Length: 499
Image (cartoon, rainbow, N blue to C red; front, side, top):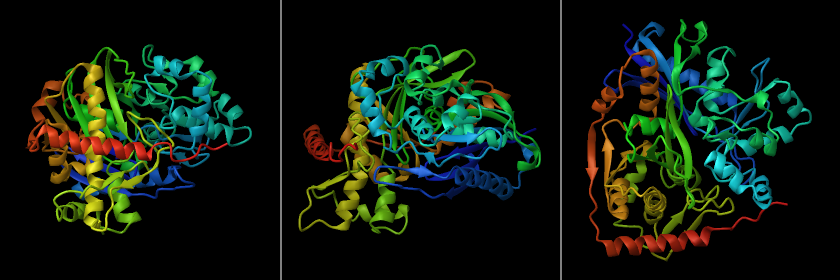
């Protein structure tokens, strides 16, 4: 009997592999960071070969560490950083350029032109998204525009597009399978979330050939098997899910009205709205959560571009800490931020502002400001940005939250989660397994191969680690948040549009 699901959790700053057992527990994991490439301010790229080599390395590492062979693996589940865009040659599998990362603002000018042409409503009504450089469609256009003859090769089917899930599945299957799931497809500005197919009008507006796009399949089904030489024997690939959709599934948010917030490189809150897409007119996104069989689940999403990445900035950019885990000790040395606010708009602002020209701002500095105050303000920014999103989400969904499930790397920070509960005024609940992105991908893959039979089994696996209860009064909560909103306004529109 197969014993585990292997999850490949390909993130923005690292690749991870996790073995998950039937009780939804991680029994072994491995992680490897890879280089972040910054060609210009506001632009972010990855080397696709670094994504692949790090991901396959940690997958092999975790199997070796656990003493597990391919025959012990029921299926592989894939969770991925979402809108990051890769183009490669069908014949050779070689990327034609660096991947453009979801954070990158390189297509701000293209998005400005689309909005000036009055196309915002066309894209929003079909895709549930706003026109923003965040999404894959304008990134594809940018890459096709950047090299003579590349678009014509794409029309002939010689150049393929994929988000990271698609690229990994292509490589894992030796180029036999070119697929994605509706959740990832719904992040491209090219996918109609009502018809659940690529949209010809949107393809024409961005001049993206349909021939280069992957087939859209269920989020939970067997797409194919890995090449034998990768793990010693073929292994079924049973799921693909964007990291945030996977986390929602891993948190067992199967019922409409349930929500989670993930503190990763960015910060992403998703609310399950059931079988009906809910339109947002105040800066949230309407997106596909997942599809299993004929069942499609939609979500409202608030996407914050910089959350945990602000701690990396404290470590790598400012040198205030030696390791990310040191931040809680530093911030605990002061009772609060001392009136300092950090708005980490390093690559613009996402929901609910959608300002690609915002840039990072620090306000409220005095002679008494210390490194600890600055670090505390940086960590607090994750909680403030979450409130930005939750206020809009509750208003548009008509569903006030009584508590918020949280996960992701920064969710280990007790001080952050206590401040999150304080600034929201609702209980914050951290599960025993906080790596729910990996868990969700494992659940989707396991359901595809019969490793689990029902979602009721998955709900039974969810266990509470700790609940954080608000400790400040409403007046203090509103005063702190009002100052945050003032700080955000000082960050907006700072960078000048190009051209």
